[in-house]
Length: 258
Image 1 (tube, helix red, strand yellow):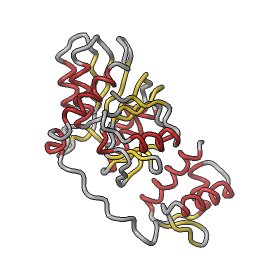
Image 2: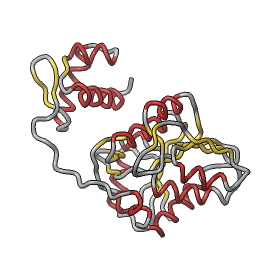
Image 3: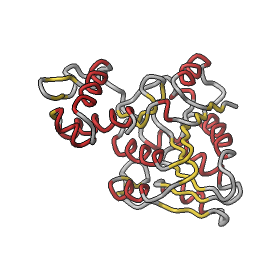
């Protein structure tokens, strides 16, 4: 298990149980207690938890408040020219006959609309709107993931959604987080959205983040993945050169800008 994956698992366990012993972490991760101790030290240094005798608890000092993400209907009207730029670049990555995941969001909806004008691919998504847009082109094979329907974003989430993703292997996963920076990686505001995006990235040969310039250098509440686990960042022409340089230095393999 990679270090980044262990760290995510530790934080997920702590989010659920609030206080755990070193032995519990070691058993859950299948590693030695010494490995867990080193991980806890690193996570404490980065402010993600606080070590206590024999284990760990959430950090004593809460992180600065993260502003709530705007409602989905509001987001769909923001940065439309930039989202279309990103959609055109990202759509060119997916070749006819390839399979890809799309998560739910206003940027991935723009991508679905762009893909609908291109040659057939296999698209698996939890977004009702993306599935509907793609289904207009009968050359595409469109699969809508099952699960619980969200009240804000018209999409499915939950254990069933993640379980279905886990049975598949695709060429591309294309996700659109709330924020993406060199320190925190790709992040979402809502737990269910982050969980689905993380599952999609874990089952793809190539992992793609779609983020307009307003999202770059920004953090949110829940990490999807570190920057080093992103193969391709697709952004718009307004992206700050210094932010892009920091993301490349953090391990992003490829950056596509108009």
